[in-house]
Image (cartoon, rainbow, N blue to C red; front, side, top):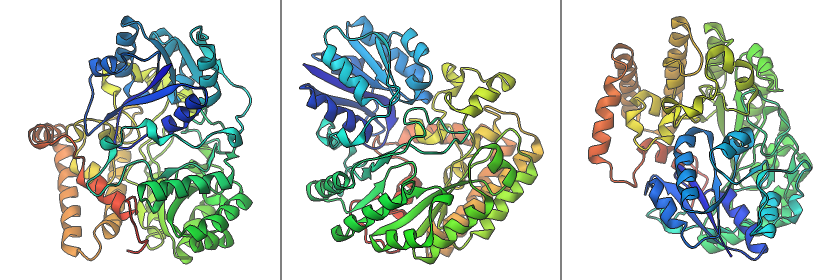
Length: 499
């Protein structure tokens, strides 16, 4: 019996969640393979159908921002006679819609046990919706099956296999942030056994030569004692790693232990420097904590990455000014402020449920205009220059705000956001291009020029850039600045941890 995993949305690295599911399928005695849509080799609908020949079940992992394309694939697969199951964030948020598109079975939430149920029942698989109400015991799960991937489509020139650096040590986040679709793993934190995680890290290091790992957990530090145990057991491996946390869930002792155990950097979801916005997005942290956490991390020698969000419907220019104040408050402590963060109302989020009717974006993902609307629109599109400008790629992607994609913003608010974009850009180029003052100034100058052109002629740069990209793009290349950001953050095969 053979199972094909399909990941139809264009991506740049191996999706480890599919490897998790493949390991479960193999435990049930199934052969598995994958068909992943990548920027290196974009696939058409017929490519997926042809690839599925000879398989008994096709499992599709779905995201919101490409559903029209996915539904075309589903239709073609069903017409060809395949059994199709689906899971992921979008099926969890919109199961009836996915069933209506022709999928036989939708697995809501964590996929492992639902997949087991389907595979055990084959050929009489349960139709409709499968949902597990109880939390999965992560201690019972096998190590992800990386052999499910065709590694050559993710391998760089130096042998680095993109995606294989991502390690999950836990799942779930206790937060209730209104902008987040947390339904897949819910708010229940569950950690994998630390010894199992260490075993997996050793395997990837020894087999693939990776010594720089990204802990992919939503919030690594939820269980403080477990985090300290992980630090104790990973230290002898002499690996470099990085992790994410809420600002309220770190302290000086923990950060020192992480640094001593090889942690190179910490990413904090600060989101806002405005107390009102923090409360309204139900972030569960204070402005004081947002300042204290990066400061402590910097003091112990960690590089700090900070995520900021903007574009909430209640915000005014004053809220943005408070963001800028936070940027300057943490100018020295933060190495890189993320270049995305314009609010996207994903269907499972509270923001979507509260505002979709008021602002008229109900079921927006079913409209062609909104295809590729993810965290950053240019990262998801096959032709990034056709949907974004230079400044949005290099400084901060505010396209959803400037174009009123979801919410309506005043001219004064947009102006304030543009000011924030420049502040973030001027800060980040210092990290991106160290000891290159001329290049730093050139990037900012070009960014300001791009912003001016965009205001005067909103589509001009995208039309020119889109054509040039089609003429000179070689298929495997993406934006050079994205590659540089990854390298500067240590997302490479071998990384010393020094600047």
